[in-house]
Structure formats: C-alpha cells, structure tokens
Image (cartoon, rainbow, N blue to C red; front, side, top):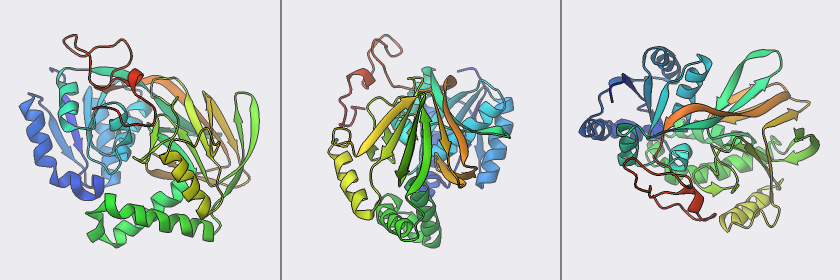
Length: 338
C-alpha cells in the first residue's frame, strides 16, 4: 500500500491486554509489509484528540482496541466529513464489530489491509432536537440494562484492577450484580414511546437495543436480519422486568428460541423516534451519554469504508477465491466459520 497509514493504539483496551500485545501486532503488520506511523494514546480524551488530528492527515487509519476505540475514531472521521479508510486491530473485551466483518483475528485483519479488501458499511446515528452535533455507533445503541451493566462493570474493574486482567471471566459476575442493583434501585424498567414505520408503541422494558449487527455483548445473537450493510436498524425490545425474567430470556436467547417465544420483539426500520418524560442514558458502543427525552435514532447507509475479510453471497476474495466466511451461508444461531 502506498497511502499514508496511521496506527492509533489504545493500550488500555481489553482491560490492558492491548498493551501486552503491542509487539505482536507491530510484528504482524511489518511482516505483511504494512508501513505505518504509530500513535499511542494515554487516555480517552487523548484518543479523541489523536483521532481528530489523524483523520485530517492520513487517508488510512488503523484502530487498535475494542469497539469503543473504533467508535471514537469513526466519529471523528464522520464529524470531519472525511473519507478515510478504517481498519480494525481487534484488542477489546468484546470485539463485536471485528467478529461481524471477519477481521477478529490479527492475521485476517492484516491480510485485509495488505490486499486492500474494503467495503462500505452502515453507521447508526443518534440525533437530539436543538443539538447540532450527532452521535454515532457502529455496533449498537442501548438503553436500560445495557447502560447499567456497562457503567457498573467499568467502575468495579477500576476499583479492583487485579481482576481487570481476567475481565472476560469476572465481568459476568459483575454484570449479574449490576442487574440486581438496577432493579433494586428502580433504575429499570423504562417507560417510553417508540415510533417506527408510522406506528407508535408504548413500551415498558428493562432493555432496549438498536443493533447494526447481529450480535451483542460478544455472546448474544439477537436478530437474524441485523447487518451492517442492510441499510436498516434492528430494534430489539426485551420482555422482562425482573431479575428472574433476565435469566429466562437469556436462556431463550442461548437456545435461539427468543424470537418464536416472543421474549424479544424485533422491529426493523430506517428511523426510530423515542419519547420519554425523563432524560435517558444511552450506551453507544461502550460510551455512555445522557440525552433529553426526545431522541431520533437512524441508519446512515454506506458512509464508512472499512477493511474486511467478510464475504457476502456472490463475492470473492483477492485472487478470485471464495472467502472462508460467507455471511449468506451462515446458519443462524451458530458461530460462523472463520
């Protein structure tokens, strides 16, 4: 590749595991002949500042981190009206986006960059009346327990840094405690009105997710129609209002029975509007923001170009060979072959 490439590296991603993998990442890129300028970030504020500057100077940006890292970089690209190509070096705790587009493994990500295998992807946008600056998400926007769990787990990990090393193992226990506290303190369920496709729905739910991809939280596969190239968002409305209900619906999702049992209702559309009498906390790819009770959530089709080794029906890899991972042949409810 002849374009100038910037590697924005977030060493704190994945509970600090990204820092330990820096040498491996750099060695892999160099082995593929990928030349880059390295930018190591020191905080979230520094990441935002670095992404804004780099977006102005480099046509190709590689983000080494998790979903939140990629969201921050993509936000700066979109807010500055740039056409940068974005690459993912997957180092977070969940990495939903990297898994979805076939670049979760370092070798595949590096090959996608080397062979310039790109595709235009959809991006979710959140708008608030009288607020000029929109918010973006690549994976999902959630309300209710999605916010409560993320906030609690992050605070818990900061208080217990030793366990951050084992984040994937310990965050499940911390998440259950967060859910218990959310119901106990009556932070959930939420009461709101949802507009979609000309219909109004009065909703009382503990969890509402607007998804741009089919998975959530690295574990749950919620909607078979969700896709980052569909030009639509899938809104998943969860039917539980107690801790026992969470366990019941989680089991339904694990068994892929949630849709037929109607314990998770899915609405698909281009634009959604939320009306609430109270301000609402949203989680956008790991970032938590508080917005007024009148919010529009929509999809922006094909606005972000990313490196990918995902394959859709009829498409081929560089050299004319079929890619291993074919979304069109993926059986719903089972892991894709990578």
